[in-house]
Amino acid sequence: MMLFHLILVATIQGITEFLPVSSSGHLALIPNLTSLDDQGLVIDVFAHIGTLFAVILYFFRDVRSALAGLIDLIQWKIRTSNAKLATCLVIGTIPVVLLGFVFYTTGIGDSLRNLKVIGFTTLLFGIVLYVCDQLGTTDQKFTNWSVKDAFILSLFQMISLIPGTSRSGIVISGARLKGYNRSDATRISMLMSIPTILAAGTLSTIGLMQNPQPTLIVNSLIVLAISFVAALGALATMMKLIQSFSFTPFVIYRVILGVILLWVAYN
Image 1 (cartoon, rainbow, N blue to C red):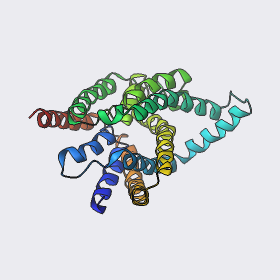
Image 2 (cartoon, rainbow, N blue to C red):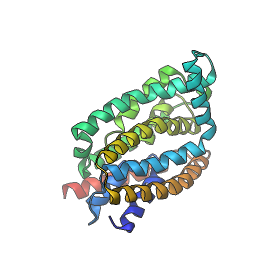
Image 3 (cartoon, helix red, strand yellow):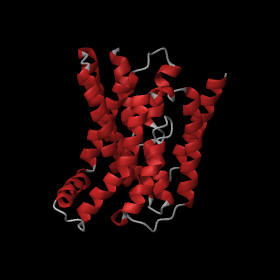
Image 4 (cartoon, rainbow, N blue to C red):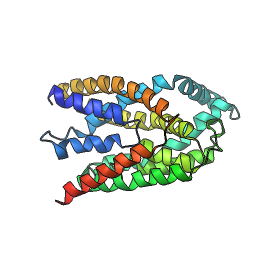
């Protein structure tokens, strides 16, 4: 792959991962709307790993609490706040990891990476985000995040395996519907991304090591580094913006983009 292609993939992934506009959808658009070849799932996953490092750094305190919670769970201290956070993240991850493994091994994920699917999901789940954001109350707080809510949000997160849905967008939609304010809904969504991306990254790394390709390894590391920098800046900007604005601008963007994609796909 050309360096320009790698930079393009990494930058798009870094900027869009934490915006409710679907990073995977945008990555899948590159080969559809340009003359560039499909970068493939391995490059996509390493771009996601770069954003994983960014979200870990940004939410380091929460990550540290979750890790401490895992230790508490091992020691059977299940009533601590850290153990509760760790449990919620585990419960929120298992369903999407299981379904993601099925998508990965059967090739379903690749088969869905086309303009028609991305167009429909971009449009549909943009509207879903708007409805949930408008109907959602603000009576729930991050400190009240329960195992029940984590499981419900895990079902929302499973839908994000369809390109164009937006993992962050669909989880935020679910959290807003459950009554979490925009900031806490986004925080929950970002934390749920950590074990999910970690699982996908581990699977792809194992596959890459089983059939090592020096050029692919170098390209993957370049994408990882660039996406990390882009994601860190985008995440900081996103968390500041939602303090003052709703998700409506993202909804408008998704609707316009979805209509354009469907027009291109069918014409």
